[in-house]
Length: 296
Image (tube, rainbow, N blue to C red; front, top):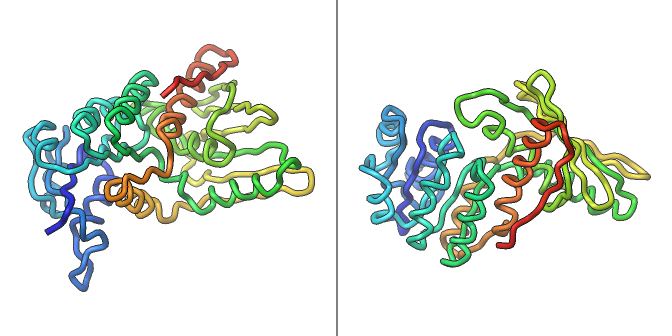
């Protein structure tokens, strides 16, 4: 019997399918990739998707509500497509002292994000989540290239797809990928942003202390993942392939639950929410937006 019972909330996407499969569906030889974990309860607003987790991915049952999950699960994965639900579902688990993975976007509201991580810090609850792309090998190669350039580094560029209008938060729904590529590569505390929206794509200049980065959120361009590091002596370009995404996230969740290990701090978990919020305010107002960071 698995040591840790996982509650999965928000079953209407490929993320939920991949996580439930990783924990609950045996390999050809009958063994499991993560034998210490098992999704026992699922819950969400889409009955057919909930049932799919039971029928296809071997979850034990559909929960009657979050209260049952908090009582019967050891940890939670919040994977709703619309990030506006993430804080509501994560908070009861955090209050109960149970670790959580909170999918991208962490939340769609800065105040909610801050409240969550302050509560987690107070309770000593480890968290993980956001976009898997901050663990991507190509993104880490860009980060390494920047670090190796040292004082000869001058700036950079990164691009990723955007879905500007949708049923799951509009700009918030997909923008975490590029926001987290930027933050992991160039630094977690940019100072200001200036953004413009044209034909549903968004271009943003993200300012740091001694350099600036250009971000291109490219509407419906699902092969646009790439990054560029520019320096005095060379430039380094990486096409960002989407490899190992779900496995990286499950590997991290494994350590978060078992060891209390957090590869990213509470401040870093909410940094993408703060950056995205500033980008939206900038392209809506047409003004440069300075970024402030709350104390956690």
